[in-house]
Amino acid sequence: MSKFSKKCKYYFSFLISEFGCSYELEISIYGTTIYYVNHTSCVKIVEEKGDLFISLAKLKDKKVPEYTTKTGSKNKVNYIDLLVIIKQKNENDYEYYNTVFNVKRKKIDFKLEELSKALKLYAEDFLKGDFTVFNSLI
Image 1 (cartoon, rainbow, N blue to C red):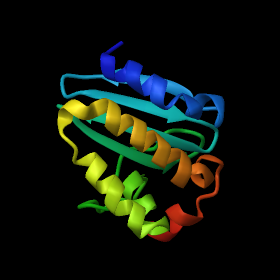
Image 2 (cartoon, one colour):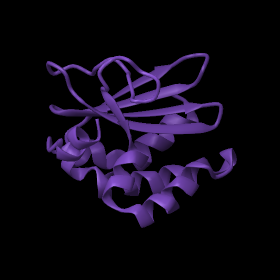
Image 3 (tube, rainbow, N blue to C red):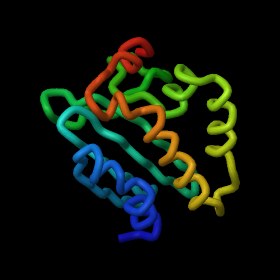
Image 4 (cartoon, rainbow, N blue to C red):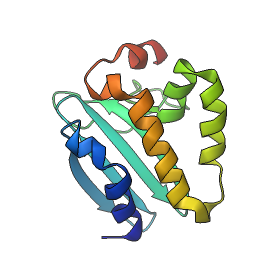
């Protein structure tokens, strides 16, 4: 288990305890991908060379969907970036969290702590199966 995955287990432990998510880890030459999956949704956390990406998806036939996003995709959008959800719900907080994503790579603990708080605050409805915001954004 990588340092990054251990840190994610710590900062995102609420996904398991409060939302009933399972934890799935993939490590490749490009980086680490962690999936938190419950009966309705999936949180995908990716670390590649110090960059961090967090996106959410609703399950398709109770399975994690293939990764497609709005940017440059001709396929149906399956994932939405956490920042897009934050922007939809609170423009002022979006500015702050956008800067968090762009903090220097060495500050991964700060990023994970702040973004785990944002996920809990802005995606609770999504994690409980309410996809109203998700559907309005795709």
